[in-house]
Length: 180
Image (cartoon, rainbow, N blue to C red):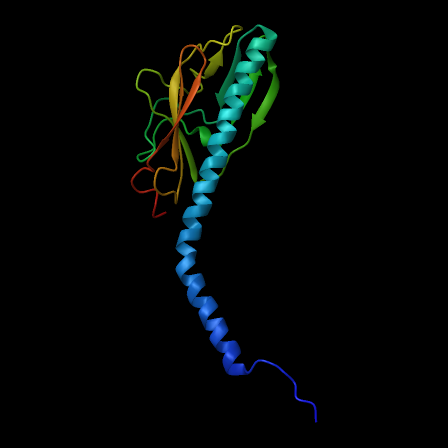
């Protein structure tokens, strides 16, 4: 009689138990890793579209605007909210042809927060991100990006200065974002 090589039921149950324990330990870290990855994705898309708006202005030698879809005005903070949430999406237009939408970014969902945070330099629907035909910023300001569940210095600050540069800085995730 030929002997078959196989796993016993006990061995299989032990392996399943070990995999289950590892999954329970790793699950919270996976949430943070996914949130941090989404934060990078959202902030990169924001940066790409800001630079696209500037390039449109320079190429067409006329002002170009990036207008938030959220009609709320004013400044806020990531932790407390308030003001416009740019994560609701935005529209990019050339002011010479305002009805011609060049790019339309839809909402990123409920988890990301992109807030205009610099007092006196609010970026909202009444004062959008705008560049003139030379690439200089018409409206300077600072946006902060964070996703619920992020941890460490995974949040991002994007500052648009008056010469049209966008300076990105990693910042700590706001209080209350990590345990969402």
